[in-house]
Image: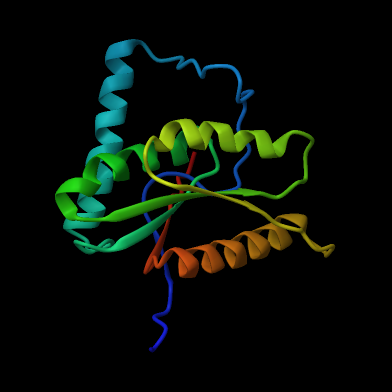
Length: 165
């Protein structure tokens, strides 16, 4: 059997590993009025659908590991992929990486668990090596853990989302 490489592709959303600004045991409150929030969510879903369908970022039937920090951007990405998956035949799993750099950081996975619903969530804890740049070391540890998880899950792609804001 030849092992297929796991590719990293960027999909609109957020950076895995981004810290959330809320406690996992408290519901998130949007500062947007309901109508504006519904419109914003619809725009995110359309952006993800466009990336998948028109730009070929994800292929029909592809197994996808969704890197999800629990922050609002990655939760929006996870939500969009979950909603789009049935008609595109994607098999999804989510992965939450705990860098263990802050007290209680592992609790953020509860937000991912709640958003994922029926899809599996892989909780990954990494050791961040000392180095000149903590952020760079955390990114390296996160990517390595996500690649191992994707291989174990059988995913051909890891979906990351990044936004400018």
